Length: 308
Image 1 (cartoon, rainbow, N blue to C red):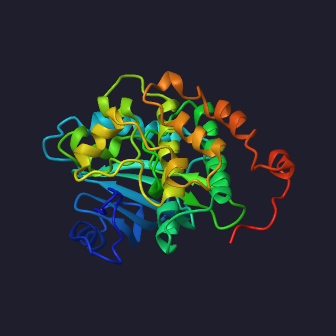
Image 2 (cartoon, one colour):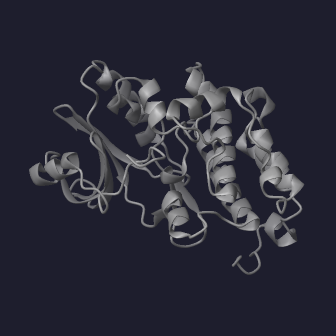
């Protein structure tokens, strides 16, 4: 795993789990071509599907041995993802298992994810205007997902694909079925603590789209500051800070930021979900009043030159 809990790139550290699956080709109807990312119990492959006659992203996971009800947890969520029909998310095509290894096939989405884009930048961050545009696109995608009846539940930069043209985004890895690769949810959350809503960490029932809006606020903070909302010596302490600590206002850390941006981020990062915007559309209305969005931005016309 990488420091922020996303699946690490095989280009840097090979995974025996991924190598074994590449050699064995255990999924009938799919020919694995290459590993895109992996850790000890999960991997993402680019594969060719004879059934769908197209390239797919094949995400596979081996549940922790003591997760005896893994199938009962995995397949209902996989089915709900496969039924989604929205441009906001990569379309699920198929789900299955080979022995104790579960897989979910998505349409293959070319491009890079947001974590990769940030890693390519020396500063690791975005300008305020560029981040505003990114957050707006993410909120639009979350609204489409919300209208489909499915919160994301696992929003973080590595799960946000940036399409090669048009500035659109595509959301990946919806839901928390992949926590099955850890002994329990607490261990899974500790592996990727930077963008989790307090109610998700507490294990509240009926976690909804307002949890995604908290994650959006944490991502926005990361885009501007170059680091997460909370920095701690251990993942567990980071989780506790999401529950109890107040974030440093972005404008205190960077006085060049507008008061509007700083205020909107803090509203998304409210501990009480009732204090956040109710829906992504509600947030988008507030975002539309931001002074850095000129008339062209608000009406959807082409924006001016990109930030340098």
